[in-house]
Length: 297
Image (cartoon, rainbow, N blue to C red):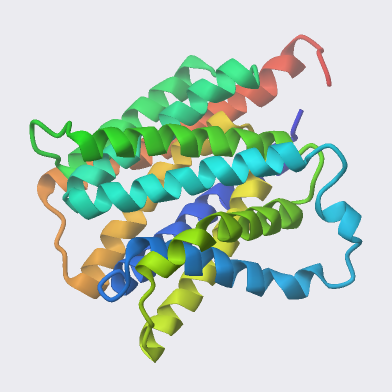
């Protein structure tokens, strides 16, 4: 079982993961004005793969994909690619607020799948943390009534497949390094998206290329951070921290797009902060309960 120091480190990495993801999404939002979403996703994985190559130099090719793990890598990449395509389709046909509200159901699915397939014990306080975070996200996003549509169903399906992909990350951390997991994901996703590119490709201008490079760099960095977090703390504990990315999104929206949060949005942000605090408290409960009765791992 992880020590207090390892858990604190894992929580900080989880927080950094979603800050990095928010910055990446901000760059994607700017790039989406000039390029199709599928092309941005493809360039993100391609650039991410290229940026990781220098870190792979000198590494034994056999350790990149350990024997018997390719099926897990392929399942993770396939599910992750399907999720990205679903997100691209849904956000093209939905308002951003509605899509954001639905998109943040991913941590709930991740916690449920972790309980079913990984047999992770989830304290009641952590379920409360996830619930508080979801309520906060809905309040900030302020979706309209009648949100369920075909695009919404596609997005929900994307959240489920994204959560399933994250479960395979958790499985792979027992066999592979964070670098190997992220590199293989980027490469396989690039290959899976390649056949679609002739039908959607547009030539980016220099500024958009810069945005794409930042998206690729941010995507690779957030994947590395996320994978490292899963090596240190349970998936169900990482899940509530995904809501903190909305705090970063609110800040970035105000700084770059002059979006002013509403009172309801501010209250929702407080719910999200409470979510993170409860997640930390639940981690203390998990760590200290075994020591009370002398159990150890």
